[in-house]
Each structure stands twice: as C-alpha cells, then as structure tokens.
Image (tube, rainbow, N blue to C red):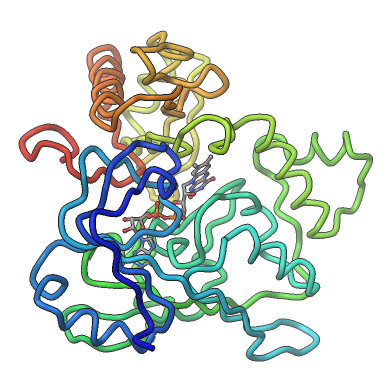
Length: 350
Ligand SMILES: Cc1cc2nc3c(=O)[nH]c(=O)nc-3n(C[C@H](O)[C@H](O)[C@H](O)COP(=O)(O)OP(=O)(O)OC[C@H]3O[C@@H](n4cnc5c(N)ncnc54)[C@H](O)[C@@H]3O)c2cc1C
C-alpha cells in the first residue's frame, strides 16, 4: 500500500469545470498524507513541473499539462474541539467545499453559510481565500496544514502566516511550493448573520424569513447563486473569470463621474476602490457574445463559458479580447481570477 496511484497520459476533461480536453503527462492520486514525502522525492516531482489539482474549478488549462498533476483523494472531517461558543473542525484537502459547509451547518456551526455552493475542494479554499457575499474564508481559518516541497516536510501554518488578502494568500504567491493537505476552521455557534451584500435580504424576504438562522442564510445564498451563475455541470465555466479591478480612489471617482451607473465598492485599503468588472465588460458589449464555442455568459458578463467544444486556447483568446477592449475604452487592466496553465510565455497572463 503506497498511498498513491500513478496514471500516465491521463485525461483531465472531467477534472476541470471548463471541460477542456487536455491530458496530464502523469497523474498522481494521493490517498495518504504520508505518501507525499516519498512521492516528492522522485526526480520527476522534485525537479519538474507539478500542478496540484482540486476540482479544477479555478483553472484554465490551455494545453496538455507537462510533468505531474497531483490530486488529493483524502476526505476526512473531524471535530477537534467543541464547546458552547465554538468548535474547531478539521477537513482534509479532498473534501468538497460545499459538502463541508453543509456539514458545519448540520452541526450547529455558523460562519460559512455565505460561502455555500462555491465549487471546489477544502484544500483549494485557502489558495485564493475564497469569498462571496461579504465573507472571506480566511476569517474562519485557524491553521492550514501543508506539505512544503522545498523542505519535504509537513508544516502547520497559523492564519497570520498565510498572508491572506483579496483572492490571495501565501499559497498563491508561492505557487508550486505548498500542497495543502488539511484546513482547521474555528467556527462560532452563534454569530450575527452577514446580510449586507447584494440580494441576500431580498431573498430571505421572498422566503418569508425574518430572523434567519445560518442554514436559512445558506439557503438564500444557494437560491441566489443558482439563479445568477451558470451551472458548470450544464455549461463549462470557472465562475468569475476576471477579478474586480482595484484602482485609486481618484480613478474610481473620475470613472464614476463619466459613467454614473458604474458600481464602485470599498476595497478595504485607504485611497483605493474596487470597480465592477462585470459592468465594464457588459458596457463593452460582451455579454452573451460567442466566438465559436467560446463565449461570455448571457447570464453574467464576468463568466467565460465553453458552449461545448472550445479549446483552452480559444477560451483564452476570447478573454484577452475582452480585457483589451476594457483597457481601450476605460484604461482599466482586467486580471483573470483563475490560474492559467500552459499559455504562451510572452503573451498576457502567461
Ligand atoms: C460556478 C463557479 C462559481 C464560483 N464562485 C466562486 C466564488 O463565489 N468565490 C470564489 O472565491 N471562487 C469561486 N469560484 C472559483 C473556485 O470555485 C474556487 O477558487 C475554488 O476554491 C477552487 O477549488 P478547486 O478544488 O476546484 O481548485 P482548482 O481549480 O483545482 O485549483 C485552483 C488553484 O488552487 C491550487 N490548488 C488546488 N488544491 C490545492 C491544494 N490542495 N494545495 C495546493 N494548491 C492547490 C491549484 O494548483 C490551482 O492553482 C467559482 C467557480 C465556479 C466554477
């Protein structure tokens, strides 16, 4: 029992939510954390390219993936501590994020309800500090357990060491070094619901709920997301393809004066503001656009979609055209949210 399985020339079509038909030179499926040390001491993994893959819901795979794709098939959830005020819950990297959120709600724990229905795995959640409806996962993370490829050792990193930011973390900044194996969350039993963000109150009102329990907030979020976002099970996509651009307050005010309907949000940093990337893209006329099977969703202008047989290259070409037109019209540079793997090295977002 080595704790892992290796497959050469493995298809990844069912392992990325854009459903682009690419292959991995070698796929390593890991069932035991203890196998990582042995695996990463093989020359191909020690010296060559390695991609850690969760559910592939935040990736655009442009070409076949050279080297090794590592998938973590560890699915345990354990309540480590519990009292009247909070609990400390550990989930292994391969657990589905939404299953984990539902598990915590089912055990009377609050905090993660606004993050319901985000696709992907627990192991990927800290990578870009997933967030939705005014909540970021970093707020509830106590410890990230990760295998360090540099020192070939398992490390425990406290929240303060993880350098969390808006869709950012140490694990993203040092991509390739860390393999997240488990995450520990400190979750309160009672918390003020976060209802300030777009549409949650209205959805709860439509559900006829006055003082919502966390599970009811989760239900409102699930209803909203189901209505607003194209379902990757039905049409290939990776959620929001572009980050909301953060610009100087001065630029935001100038653009808002020229474009009175442009949504401007606080960025969390003094002197800066966040703009709605969806608005900028829609204003350039891209919503519902198609170049063959590569398209921009007609439900949501931020979502790049695969209508069937688009290649990663075609999807990337359309995304670049969208960004170039926003840049030409508004002088704003959009950045992709998903990681792009295999783009030509001298082009944008390689
Ligand atoms: C319809 C849809 C809606 C979405 N909505 C949101 C949203 O509201 N908010 C949000 O923040 N995101 C959202 N996303 C993006 C995505 O769901 C998250 O980023 C999710 O955390 C990705 O998980 P994954 O397992 O699919 O990761 P993958 O796509 O497989 O990987 C993403 C990145 O993380 C790395 N990675 C994955 N697992 C590990 C690990 N164990 N250790 C080290 N590195 C790892 C990969 O190498 C890659 O760089 C959405 C995506 C879709 C398709």
